[in-house]
Image (cartoon, rainbow, N blue to C red; front, top):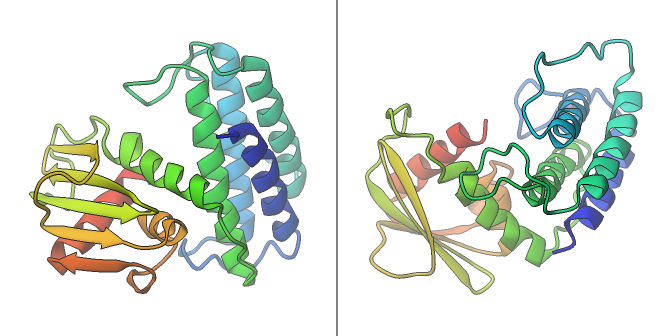
Length: 240
């Protein structure tokens, strides 16, 4: 997967559409405008530039960026994250939130999907949504399921959706089986075992549904609909 090229192209498209109008409301993010999305993504980029530079979380954080216009800040940050990823390569040891990957390769992938989802946000705000590459969407499904959802975040039962069920997701000929209860989420690739509910569809639509950027009309479901809704709620907690 050519993640760095995706960061370049997706971030360019985000900036291009944002320039159509910063005041437009973002349908998938209540109370957010395009301006909020642009400033959020700029902050994420600058934060990850510092992480890659330091190999650790920056402290203190955040700096004061109030003197820059949103698009000036975004353009600077977009160039900086591309430069920082190129300089780090994919094997530099650094801080990440994944228990399985403490290298800069993690941030190549994470910044790609951060950018894709927020590109969709600004496109939806202006009614000009463009396609997502199917392989990129499949990788995005895999990434949001682990580590975003399936990390060790639930040990204290801090969830409004303490479901005890197995959900199977299928898209583009691939499957994932997820068991969630109040204190854990286990994600496995494949379709072994029984499932309480199933979610399937086009890779891009399943990817967007998982991130709350598409409704249930974009996917197909089977089994217990309450489990599907609770599963989506659990994802929203993990991806805040």
